[in-house]
Length: 451
Image (cartoon, rainbow, N blue to C red; front, top):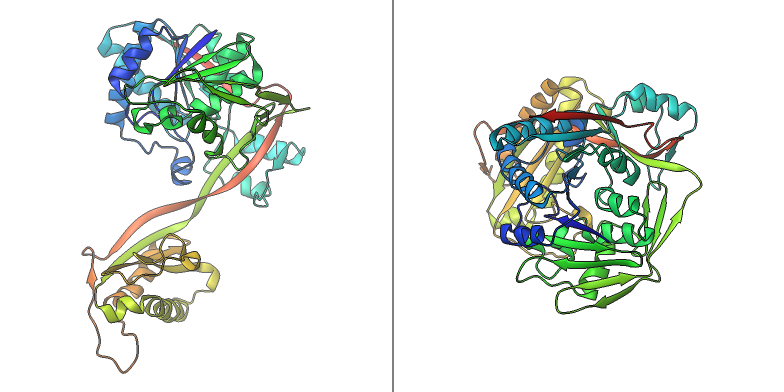
């Protein structure tokens, strides 16, 4: 049997300290926590930075390093620093070094790096080793080399290599959410389907329980399957909460693809052992005929400037979309005329917060709000051009009337100056797989020891 303690869905979200202590007393074989994902968009990958505050990350990580020492087991984090680039891994390593010095405890750290050299990926692309996933954008070598950061998602094999160094702590770059949990049960020869299925259910901590915010769960893996037990007093796992988690961030509720194959839970059985624990059996692992890892890449899409005005006059609130569409047409024409631009040189949007900013034309809940925030978003090839077009937009958002017969209105800007430069904006351009002859071909491993 292998016991995996998962403190939280991600480092930076906090965890229940009493529940964590209860998990430590259960004598886990490993403590595993995710560091992030692509949930927050391409900017963090593009820039190679974490979305979470360093101060908060350090406090939570220090608590987990104490827990690791008390439990006498390895501590592993995957997708370190939200995006898993080498720069984010170094950021996490620096925090770990600080904590180790403050705690005065020797520690051995294995660092698994997932960043990819663009030339290597381009060469692999030419050799037909880069394959698009469904609905992936078309790419070429120029697309690959334009990426500011590319990462490959490590699987259980790479995490196993890191654990085999005997490290107290493993700081991994980009990994699949499940890899850090599945690695040790797989290495111990336990049920393969159960290892991957339990890892999927436990990837976000107590999100598979009745109190998702409590964070801490314990997963017991064995030769037939696994058992999920939340550690917080007021958290329970039920067959419903456990089985439903296969729908989380997964397009198919029965199939989950991972490096080297896929998980099939079609025949899985979920049984409540008591009021809080659920046992799962019958999960199957189907190996693939080649070993692939997913690639993620982001590049600069342009430079953005944002201008925000507030509409409260009910006449304008009721006709906000007409007003916004007219501004977009007139301001875009002015920008092309006065700056000598083509339609490909910039884009101009106005998102109506409080009306349809999330769904646009797909919005079905049509009500008349008290107030609407009109957010103008200018994206252009350079920061200077983005700022210049935003200044052309400024008077429209401040004074533009619905019709030529109306008195000129005055709306409220959120800030002064109204223009808020956002700098570079990024876009995902890689949603592909990379075929590897050996699982470690796209990854590097190094060991650090701090006394």
